[in-house]
Length: 465
Image 1 (cartoon, rainbow, N blue to C red):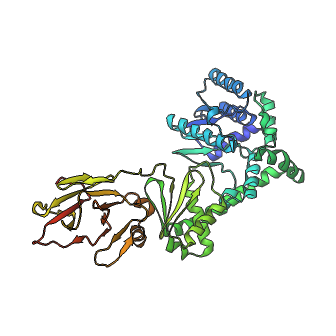
Image 2: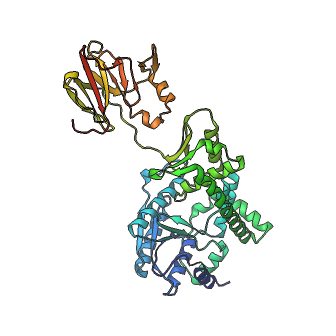
Image 3: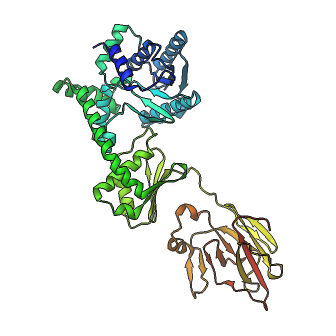
């Protein structure tokens, strides 16, 4: 087979890009990516889009400096735009180097993709890579969708990530390179059995190829067939998911727990898989089957407020009868010093709005504000506005006892994230007067005309008084 002729047919048949597209080609300097770069250079003008090369010098080998210089010079002579970065050694971890390098690489690709307003990113994954990926995911217990292997094309930011060489074997790429006399670099670490993928590449796959020389096309067919079946099934699963979920702001996905538990158990797993597929559609790190089970257990649990970590800095949070899948929050509300509220003053609240304390004879029209009447002889000034603290209790209006504020939050099903935003108002002795927005204590009374009273005004909108 003439690989270039077949490549042209594939380009014409699949139409992954157009003449007007802007394409980035990921080139490491190995035989795979140098073959892809040569194929792109040889495209006829009517099919050749604008394209540039993106390269990451991981600085994991001494030869990487020479390889980067060679590629830079090669692209300069060929008048190909060249974009490169280095993975600084102080950013490199001591464990999970493969995964960390991959994250760094794709972060750089995304940056250049956005900067150059690219439409396509091309990588040189080939048929042997497909076998390695499928076997590795099967062994470690990935999801069914993940076990379908590498997709020939998938969404990437606002464009597409395309693997034009998936149909070809490693042997075919070496043969093409020899025919074209391409210069490439062999990464000596590819022979090291310290890396998981290398053990599959150098030990497992050669044995399988001895059993069946047609291993690459067979795995390609398996991947294609499984992706087709999943696409058909996914239409029905998405219909079910649409009924019980919604997409919230900031990329969050929310799911109705009760409606989920009413689904057939087989559909439940599929719904969670499709939900995670939507979350990870632009992520480089796939989720695994265990994560689906972990979320199912979270929804089936008796605990109403729990959460689990997901790959790629995502969280699955159970908040009573709602499941929220969202990016992990980087910052939490800082501990604040209690703010004093003197008579005749307004104090702005950290999360918006304000609160003021006045005497009854200076009563201001409520205009929708929350008004709390206080017996002036029962509270000691100044009042304090602070975050809730462990063990906080308050006497409840209309009740003879006290109750923990934590239990009030649980009774009213206040999500954990909102609890750190809430404030209590105490008098100078520490007695809780009110839990803003939720409960008033027995210190809150009705308006009386024959006694000296204070009025506590909670303006949630922060309107001018």
